[in-house]
Length: 511
Image (cartoon, rainbow, N blue to C red; front, top):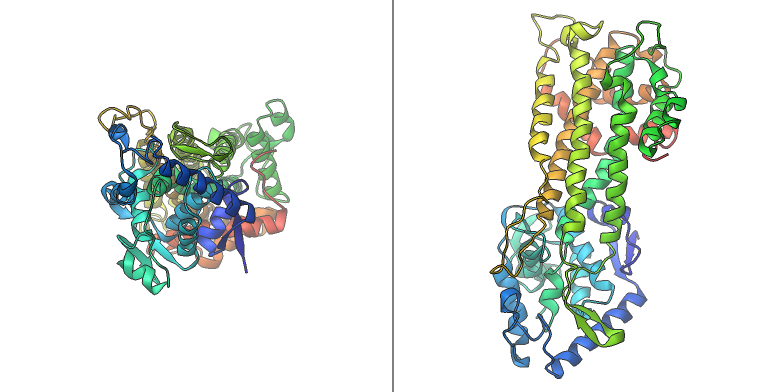
């Protein structure tokens, strides 16, 4: 059975994808069990001694100075969840809900949160038995943790709210009953431990950065196909050029292009037809490479965050202390996810410019708009419009969310990250970029059809065959959106990248 063991220290981006998308089961490590139990005993001691500790024996936010008696601690935690469940908008999809629960469980497994082991195990069983809380996408400031969306997650844990179970949207209570799970009655610190963290923004961003890594590889492939359709010059990818400006992503992109184009009879050399190509072809290593470097940095930050404690207060059992701090603040994720959106926006920008070069007869030696019957047929004319619309939308979405802040909780929480907005925007930009690359692949394949597909490079031939396996050559006008959707499905499933890598070897994002 495929499974991921949670110890709070070694979760990877690939692990998150495997649980979220591929149904891997989740278990706690033996060490995590011990640490969770030790931290819980520390919390119980605090409560018994009536120590004044934020969120355990006090109210929350501006109510930090209101003392809560021992007999009211359960009501305090329950009230926290039901009052904070203020999310709005459409719910996150199944895979994001699974990722959110996984990341919260892993953070709790570190043993600095004070949750009961039984509560943590119930959360994990919700993942394993397919109970996915309805978590609205909007409503988090990304500073005191993802309070509103995580509260919706916890509602189902306590037998409230709504959930998806076996494809149906039902009450949280019914979902738990059908899955054979007993809802939890929260006690001291537990509600706060479950919602005071960055797991919503990080889950959304984690899945996006995984897909981004695959997309920038595919962007190299689609660019290479366009290079062949446009008789592009390969000298610009010579490693000697890139070794004198040795950014890792740039070096990797130039290497990828040459690997994919190996054996091509459709490319040219400097001076053969012209001395230089336009930037959208010649500068692919520099443009794609910069985005790859950004994505590599973001992946490093995500890996740190998914193995971090983002609670407040943090329980330190070895010192018998509970410290109030700011680990819930989303700024360490907000900036990277804004950067992710910008990096992906640029991938789409350069792709759209290559699409324009493919369809514009003033810029190539191909039939106008890649149709053999121009005038009677429009060919790829409006496909370029769609790509242009998507990259324009990305320019709006790429405005950083993290530069904004609106104080909350009567100005006690006077700086917030908006990191969850940044993550959601990056995800939306990713989807737009995937669609743009899909259009470039379609246009590139069509352009090659006006030349000689048998002369394609080692890797581009594989990509061309993948496209042609779902979409035939364009002869007469037909419903273009269907073609676009078919290739988009290949892009989303990473099918083309996998097929090309099987032929030419692993495509690198860092070299």
